[in-house]
Length: 320
Image (cartoon, rainbow, N blue to C red; front, side, top):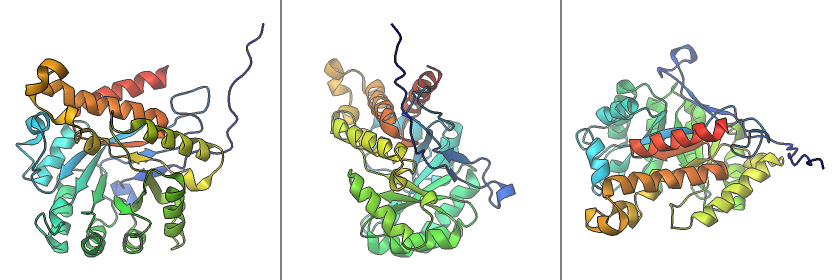
C-alpha cells in the first residue's frame, strides 16, 4: 500500500526583513540579522524551506531594573547601571541583537528627556555593534517626543523601532520613514487587529515589507494555548497568500516568562518547584520553544541559559 503525499502546496511565504546596517551599507553594525523567508510550516523541512532560523535578542534597560529576580541579577547586576556596558555583555553572551528599552523616559520612572534618550542610544550603538531594537515607554505623549529624536540619532543603522499600534502610529511611522528604520506593529492577540495596524501604517506610504508583527504573547501556564493558536492561524494565513499576515513575527518572551510566579519565586519554593536558578531559565526556554513552533522569527529573551537551550532546540528541529 502506497503512502499518500501529505505535503501542502502553499501559495505564499513570509517576507524577508533585515535589521542592522554594516559599514558597506552606510551603518556601523558588525553584522545584520535577516528574518523570515519561510515557505512552509515551522520546522517541517519537507513542507517548505526555512532560510533564516529564528533570531534572539537579549534585553538591555536604560535604568537599573527594580524587580528582576536573583537568577537574572547574577548575570547582569554588575553592568545594569550602564546600558552601554550591558549591551557589551549581551554581545559577549552570544545574542543576535540588542533589545534596548527606554524605561527611564517614562514620566514615573525618571522622565528623562528626548536628548538624554538619544545620548543613551548613541552610547549603546558605539559600545556594541549588534543590530539594535529600540522601544519607547508606552506612554504615547512621551514616546511621540522621544522616538523621533532616537530615530534621528540612529540614522543609517537600520534599527527596529517599537511600537506602532492601532491608536498610535503616525509619529513613529513618520520617524521610521525619515531616518530609514524598520517598525514593530503591536496588536492584541487578534489577526484582524494585526491586519488593521498594517493597513494604517502602509496607508502612510510605509512599506509593508519593512514591518515586523508583534501579536502580543503569554508565558507557559498563562494562556499559551490561546496565543499559540492565534500564531498558528496567522502563519497559515500568510502561507495561504494573505499579504497582510506575511511579515516576520516578534515575541517578547523574556518579559512574559519572568513575570510568572513560577519563574520569579525564590528558593523558598525549591522543595516543590525546584531551585530558582534552574526554574526561571527553564520557564523562559520552554515558553520560547513552544511558541517558536506556532510561527515566530524573533525572540526577545533575558537569561543566557534559556537562550542557549532554545538555540539547541532550534538546531535539532531544523536538522530533523
